[in-house]
Length: 302
Ligand SMILES: Nc1ncnc2c1ncn2[C@@H]1O[C@H](COP(=O)(O)OP(=O)(O)OP(=O)(O)O)[C@@H](O)[C@H]1O
Ligand SMILES: [Mg+2]
View 1 (cartoon, helix red, strand yellow):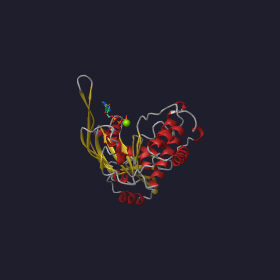
View 2 (view 1 turned 180 degrees about the vertical axis):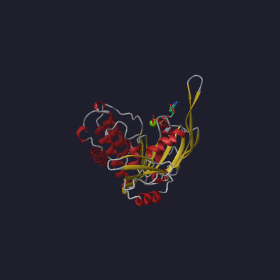
View 3 (view 1 turned 90 degrees about the vertical axis):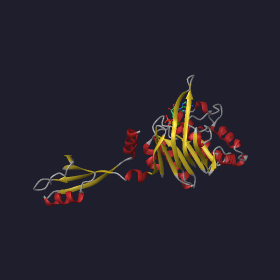
View 4 (view 1 turned 30 degrees about the vertical axis):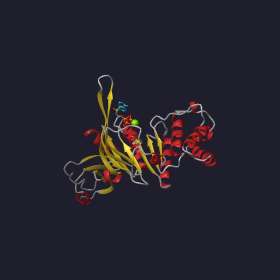
C-alpha cells in the first residue's frame, strides 16, 4: 500500500472555508509488516485512511493498494477495513452480522459459518454471540468491527484506531491478534495515538502532525539514534565522589548517589575517575529516547 504526496482540503459552510485536513502524506507499507500510523487528534489519520480506502477523493496525490491505483475493486477484495465509527445493523447478533458480511463478500455458506465462529472466539465474544448488537458495550462493538474486517481473510488489514474503547486486557488481546495476523503473513496497517501499543506491535511507523508526515521508519531507527543520558549509581569511597563532568547532576539514590550524565559525556572516563577515588559503581543505565519523547519532540515542532 502506498500514499504518494496525498492531500485533502475540505470546504466548509457557506463561505467555503478551507480545512486542510491532510497536506502532504507519503509512505509505503511493505508486505507482511505491521505499520503504525501515529498522530494526535485531528492530525489527519482518518482522512488519510479514507483516501487509501477510496472513500474520500484526494485533492492532490495518489493512493495505491496492492500496486493498483485507488479505487480498485480487485484490491478491495483483498483487504479488510475497520472504520473509525463503524455502522452496525444493531438488531443483528454478531453471528448474523458476520454471516451477512461474509455473504456480501461472496464467502460460501459453510466456510462462512466456520470463519464466523472462529472469529467470534478470536475476538472474545463467545459469551455474546447471539445477543443483538444494540445491547453491546463500546469495547464489544469494537471487537465485532475487528471480526468483520477479518471475514474475507484479507491479505491486508487496515484498522482505524482498533484499541479505542478497549480496556487494558482488551487492548492486549488486540495487540496479540495483530501479531498473530502478522505471523500468518498478513500486512497490518493501523492508526492510533496510543504509544505503548505501537512500541509493542509495529515494525515501522509514520508520524503525522497537522496533516504532514514528520518521520517514517523502523521504530528502533527513529528512537535509538538518540541516547539522552546515562545514569551512574555510586556508593562514595574513602575519598568521596569524583568531580562531576560538565552538565551532570546528582541526587540521592537508595544505596548511594545517582549521577546523571548528559548526552555526549565520556562515561568511561567518569567511571575510571569514580574507581580512582575508591567509589563503588552500583549500576550504569542508559536512557534512550522513548516513543513518547519522540512524539512530544515532533509535536512541539509541528
Ligand atoms: N468531512 C470533513 N469536512 C470538514 N473537515 C473535516 C472532515 N473530515 C475531517 N475534517 C477535518 O480534518 C482534520 C483531520 O481530521 P481526521 O479525522 O482525519 O483526524 P484524525 O487524525 O483521524 O483525528 P482523531 O485522532 O481525532 O481520530 C480535522 O481538523 C477535521 O476537523
Ligand atoms: Mg481519526
